[in-house]
Length: 304
Length: 314
Image 1: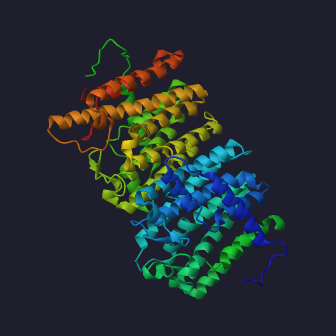
Image 2: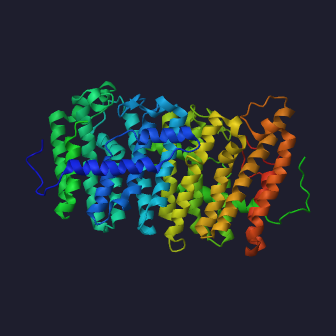
Image 3: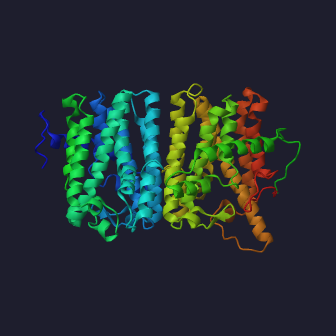
């Protein structure tokens, strides 16, 4: 798929994802050790190390490397964005929220550890993400780290993940959810953290304000792209292929792109977002931009 | 019983005015820090808990007193002061949830989830934690406070609410409090005060030993305050012939007499930690000394509060 627009440089994306994914997994494994109280730390690790594609951390590292930084500089923040992603999943899955039993093919956190521990493990991951960035980032000025903290804080709360979840909750089951509201949900629930991951990587790598803004736009496009593709997959794939309950959005009468504009238009929209994303990278070195271009394609073409 | 001997250790400092003046300013700044936007309900839920008129604002007041000890101007301290209340509120909202302590009232009002629902309460907490961090990094004037210090404050906040801090205290309280009673009490009630006092030193760029001293001071006062609360409640219950259905506390485990002994010990310990700061001048340390006495004697009402045991005396 999408072979009409191949990149010109020899770049092995599979190897890249494999290597970066491994580094991220290793760093995550070492980021939280089991200590007292054991159950909380086990619950944090259970969800944090449950696999997942590590798209956000890899985006963070790739953005850092694009502007001249290195992997080690970005790694604490790369781990932090995955911690934030994980905490939001743990809380969203709770019975009083989306009430999900299955996540990444495994029982959800509260199913294994209980609701109380799941709430606390989420809170602890949230806090630890900031602690990890501040205590473990090396070779970056305090000014830039302060900016990173501000950026991460912004994407979690009422300007990000939480706002998306709130509007999503109040829209569940409503048939009159329009495109505008759907986009609000996705931009906040999904795109914000992807955007944050890229921008944080860029800040750490020493990007100029202009570069940061280009990468921010790039990330916003792929963030929305991510969700459009998710919606399409929910309609077209089985639970087993997805590792989570398929068709759930349809069953719960949730608004999705296929429902609002149809599958074909959804696919067209996805292609446009991918192109818009790529356009933002046109002024960067094409060899260095290859990972981000391929990541966008990967998000567009993923099957689960 | 513990009684105040007016001659011993009495600091002539008007804590009541200090506290009440600061509460006004903090409340106003908190009000401005959380404007209602779309989606409204989440902001309203956050405001409901953060702007609680019955909140005594003890953490930010202790923090400001610690920061002022080293000469930090108030305008540089207010962002962190507000953040302490945001983070404190977040942790209380989550502690009250049905799957946790299952509380319906807090400070005489329905809890957050009782009004806004469990889902919104979880999200309000999730939003208040990062808002606290964001508030600090966005509003702390960097011409007064270098960024490196701001980062130390962020790290301290995260530690205090995290998996070995307040979250640990809440977890152990839910599960095996009897095994670790003192540890749980320290985590649940000492951690916030420790963070508040320590952040004053961190923001000011105090040296490690001074920060460590403030840490021990804060922790001690936090536990002391709670223990006095527990004794007062136990006495009130006894007077009314009620059974104490409160959770495990030092008082319910060791009895009032032992608790009173412990209260004296904590009070002495807290003040001893402050001795090292006398070099900054008597009037600079006075607010911190007077907190210790207030924790024991509750000589005035900070805010009207139905749940409050202020002005009761031991």
